[in-house]
Every structure is written in structure tokens, then in C-alpha cells.
Image (tube, rainbow, N blue to C red):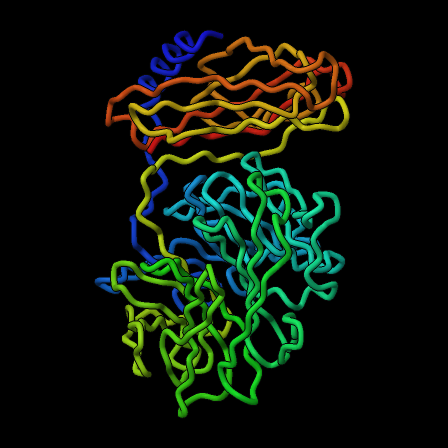
Length: 475
């Protein structure tokens, strides 16, 4: 398929789709989203959108049960979705938690590998990767990551072979965030574990995990620092927020008792030196959820004792300013801000694929900013080498039986013949990138196009391997 031909076909497709399915992700930059307990929901748990300026608060999603660990929800700019775990069905078999994506309207899409996962410390990078801790028993101190096609991987140590294990009991990881300028994950301590050499198990411990360029392993051994929020008492991480305007990271702490003396329960962490210094001091020990509001230029902490969101200026001592009047009880919630983005388009993988040679499941994902007038790429890899195939393009998602798997693209508009390179017959060696440019019409914003790839593969159940589905949501 020549790029010009693909461009012409995509132009015709999105022009036809525009009046049919324009919606978009539904997020407003700088809004805050709260995940956890809320009296707004009839189920007492859910996700709420908060306008930080007016305080107007709207329930977007009711959830049966939310996960009470730090950073159990995060916004992923690559997918243009909130990513979180929840229990939705009252009689769902154990494990109850499933991983989901949600747009700004509250529409949920299951993340296939998350069908039996309990994620927290969710840390998207913006290029399709999402790092997280898995709270299931038996996962140890591993950190996992999701790629752009929703396939799950384990993060390796510096040798690229040994899975990284920060702590076999999985108790030393509580909350996690990725810093783009340092290509590093930052974790904070959980309950009474001294992870810094010679450290005090009651203090807050922060670790910096610098990643390799491809994000599959550590580039260097972990770095560690600690800070005593409340001398003599146990300090526990209650979520990361930021980065702050100066590049530091905001970190929330739960420590001590309610009321005086005020303690530095919002901290700033220098990502270069790991120096930890106070951001704001207050007497409410709960701080169940942390974020930074660019609109308010303040740190945000959920207060258990006041059951609401409070905003704190840098250097403030107590008396946070209320953000809205919504009631958010509980001690472990998650709060995140929708950032100002250079691209509003989203690539959303959905459904599952069908393996071929070597048990490899073909991957289909997008590259570049899918906005009107932008150059993009449709990438396929992990295919048996040299295989011919087809790219299905439609106007809707689907879930129909097909070749022993599932056809995820519906209302088909195009079927494009393709062929991957790589050593013929070699498992996973085949790949292909189809470049294209989207039409410049602003009316295409919010249009979604749905794709799936199929390949000839003699090792597949019906001699055809399939990728997962891919939604291109034009920004």
C-alpha cells in the first residue's frame, strides 16, 4: 500500500465518518478528577469531575468498589483516557477488580490484560506505556507495564533479564509517577519498610528508577532518599501529583494525628537530587489523594476529616482552601489533573488479538498526533516474518467471531492489503508502518475510526493471526 493511496483512503473515510460519530474524549484541560468514595454516587464510589475555578462537581461514573491505594487512577494522554481499576459487578468471581479506561463522559472500556489485576501506582508516560504495581498476591515487588497495544510486560533490572524486585513482600511501593525529563519512575514507601540503606522504617522513603531508552529495564541501580514528616510516627505515601511548575514532584503524606502541630504533609521532591522539602504544612493527617492544580497554582489534598478537596499554596501552613462543596470521604482516594496537551487525539487499543507463530499476538498501534492536518503512522509488529495480511478499517467497534478469534472493527469501510517484512516464517519478526496524513478539516475533531489487522499464519488456530482492535480518536 503506497502512502499516497492510504492517505486518499483515510481522507475519504474520515470525511464520511465525520457526521456519523463525532464525539471526542470529553475532557476539559485543567479539570480535576477524583476517584474513590463520594456521596455523589448511589454506590458510594465513583469518579467525579471537579472544575477547580468554580468548584462545580459532576459524577461521571458510579463504581461498585474502588481500590484504596495511592495513584489507583491516572490520566493517560496517549489514549486520552482515565486508567483505573474497579469492581463493577456485584457477583463477579474473584478477583473482583478489573482494569478500565474511561473517557470524560464516563464511558468505560475494559483493558483486556487487566481482567484479573489490582493495579495502583498507575504511571502513564504518554507514548503508550503505562507502568503500575500489581497488588495481587504472588506478584511480589515487581513493577509491570502496559504497551500501546495493551500487552502486559514486567519491568527488568539493569541486566534486561532479571525481573526487577524492589521488595519481595510488595509493601515498599505506594504510589508511583513518571517524570519525562528524567525518564524515571519515582516510588514512595508504604507501611514501615526501610528501603534506603540504614534508613528509619517510620520515615517517608522515595526511590528514583531511571529507565532505559525503550523503557523495558532499569538503566542504573535505584536511588533512594528519606524524609521524616512527623518524628516518632509512621509516615505513609498518599499519592504523587505534579510535576510542579519548576519541575519538582508533589508528594502527599499521611502521618500523625488530626490537629496541631502542623506537619509537612505535602512535600516537594527534586527529581535530579532527590532532595525532599516541605511544600505545605497542615494538621489534617489524612491527605487521602494528591494532585497539583495548574489552574489554581496550588497543591490539592483530599481531607478525610473534612471529606473534601483542599488546595494549598507553596509554603502555606494549615487552613487549606476548599475546592467545591462535594463530599469525598475516606482515607485513600486518587486525584489527577487533565493537563494542557499539545495533542488532543487518542489511540485506544481494545479487545484481544489471536496468537500466531511462537505464541506471538500481533500488535497494532498508532504513532504521532492524530489531529486534522497531522502526519501519523499505523504500526504493526510481532507478526510472523514476511506474512501477507489485511488491515480492516471501519466506523464502529465490533465483537464478532472471526477465524477463531474476534473481529473488532465493524461497519467496515476499507480493507487494505498489506505485507510485513522480516525473516520469512520467523515468529514475531514481521513489522510494518503505514504513514499517512489526516485531512486538515477542523470538522474531523472527535471522529473515531476503528481498525484491526489480520495476517496469514500457519501456526494460528485457523491459519490467521489477529491484532487487537485500535480506535483512532481524532483530536
